[in-house]
Each structure stands twice: as C-alpha cells, then as structure tokens.
Image (cartoon, rainbow, N blue to C red):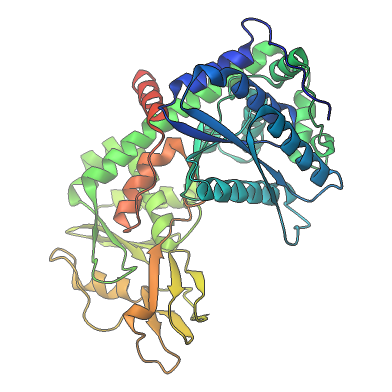
Length: 467
C-alpha cells in the first residue's frame, strides 16, 4: 500500500461532513477505537476522523485490525495498517483470530470473532466506544437478507442499529450509516489514499455478496425509498420498545428471590383483564416472548404461532398453565407467574476453577479444589413473597440450580459463584432494545447494561419523540 498523499478533500465532502457531525456529538473527553480492516469503508472512516479531529480537542482515536487468518495476504495487510497508523500518529493494535475455522457459517463466525477481539482490546485499553465503517449499502443488504427469512413486521427489518452493545462491555457505533460506499471511495480517491480489496467481497458463495451483486446499478430513488423505510422501521421499533419497557416497569416484578437463579416473574392481575388485554395486546405478547426467552435460557423468543396461542390462553381468563420456550405461564388469581419448566435439565460436572453456562441462564464459576455437580431442584426452605402461591414456588424450585459435591452433599456456598445471563442480549444488544433489556435484567437479577454514550442517548430520545 502506497503512502497516503497529504491533501484536503473537496469542500463540502459528505464523508468529512459525516465525521464532523459525529465528533461534534460526543462528550469530551472521549476515546474511540476504529475497527480498521483496510477496506474502503473502514479506511474512509479512519481518514475522515483523522482529518476532522483537530477541531475536537479531548477526542482521541486508536485503531485495531483483526487478522482472521483466512487469506495468505492478511498478515501483511495488518502490518500495512499498522504502518499507516504510525504515519498518521494513531496508536494501532493487531489481533489474530486463532483456532479452527468452521466449514460452514464462516462469515458469521468471523464476524463474531472480530467483535469479540475488538471488544476485548477496547476493554483492555479502557476505551468505551468502538467505531465501524458500515454504510447505507451494508444496511440495505442486511435488511434484504433479513426480509428473505422474516415476517414483514419483524424487528430485524429495522436494520443495523446506529449503536450496539457488544458482550455487555462496550458500545459499537456506526457513524457512516447514512453514506454510500461510492461516496467514501470518491473521498479516498480525492486524498490519494488507496485501500484493500478483499476477494471474499466478490465471492458468490456468500449470501451478502449475491445480494450485493443483484442490487448493483439499482435506481438511486429505489435506494432512497429503502433507506426511508428502514429509518421508519427503526423509529417504530424504538417507540414500541419504550412502550414494552414501560409495561414491564408498571406490571412486572421479580418474586421468589430466596436463592440464586430462582427466577419467578409475576405480571399483575390488572394487566390480564379483558380491557387491558385489548389495549396492550401486541406489547404484552412481545413482552411475554422476551420474558420466556430470558427465563427459559433461550437466545430468541418463541415464534408467532406460539405467542398467538399464549394470548388466546390469556384471553380465556381461566386459571391454568401453558408452556412456551421452556417457560411456564401459570395463571392464578394473584396474577400470571412465569418460571422455568422442569424439563431438559441434565446434571453437569464443573471442574475445579472452571466456568460454564448452565441451562442458558447462569454463568457458574467454581472456586473449589474439587469437582462440583450442577443439577436442578432446590432443597430446603425457599423464600417467597406472601402473594406467591406455594404451588408456584414448589414448581419453580424444581428447575432451579442446585450445586453439590460428588457425594451428593450440598456444596459450600463459598465454593462457587453464579451470575444471571441473558442469551437475548449478552452478545449483541441493539440500542433500540436497551430499555427493554434493562427491565428484563432487573427482573432476573442481572447487573444493569451500560447506558448509551450520553450524546447518542439524547439523539435517540429526540428521534423517538418526533417519530
């Protein structure tokens, strides 16, 4: 890669304008980590931010290149990114994706590995924000792929969020979602900066590439209409998320908190009255699906047909029980109780000093010098609120964590720790869903998710009010 030519972009360049718009929104001081692959999008992001940065004292950037080890040239390309950053006075990090690469789902696995490595380096350097160069073209391709496998009203059709929390650690922001790739390449050409062309971006083996090729030469008006539809879907998702979070805050609470992992969530009886069900039906249906996934240890909520059966069960106004996604919905006079179904809970051996995810719900870490057995079924007295029927407590207890020694004796409570997990949100949490995720985290005793960067939070709030 040749040395960049030190020259200014044309006046009014949209890429520089987008960099200024983003940097001006940040509180100061701010530290940013740019995900730098060397492709045109990430290169344009790095160079535009670097050009605009002198106007924003207190904001600093670093860069990280992830070498996936999938091409012979990748190590040299990472070295070139490091050399470029040194010339620009930007601190650069390189991380290698190690281990066996999957034969199928390679792009998804590489994406997950890239984000994990970026999040790790950001956490290690105490950098709270990662930036990626995703563009409007990436957004359109993402929604086109999701549209092929989703119903018209599914949340995924809102596209990539402008901000996503990675692994509960660090926020990934996408400042260039309004820009076309062609605009970024014209900017790079204007400043004399070349970039790397990854041959996998032209390999029709991958679904995204096939869609990209099919969309080549699309009418600009059609693209603009797609972007407007995605923006509208994002605003709808944000507003609906606020409504669901408010519903949970008003009508859901955690009960039966006597033991680790004893998740019983109660929805108030007022919410289940016919008039309330008619008023809150869609929000309640989605809230119940998300709660079921959390309590059942699943990474996704139950499908539309299952939720339709659940709402019919609630409409019937008759006490009884129904199971969805491993979660029991137990209708009583005192309200609707949700707890884990006592099925599919095998015993698991936890080695000394090791950690594992138990039932998708709890990250359990051993602090013992001997093996521990993780199984289901609490023993002994179980604390519960006065308005929790004993039958609910007894059924919920059969699915909760019990830790014992190989002899069958209960393990010393000091010999292990358990932290609640949410498969729905612990890997990727779009900013659209932050309020819902925070409410559910509270209901299962999980530590709060980090808030959005203050500036972006204000912008999202303003957009929601004007949607």
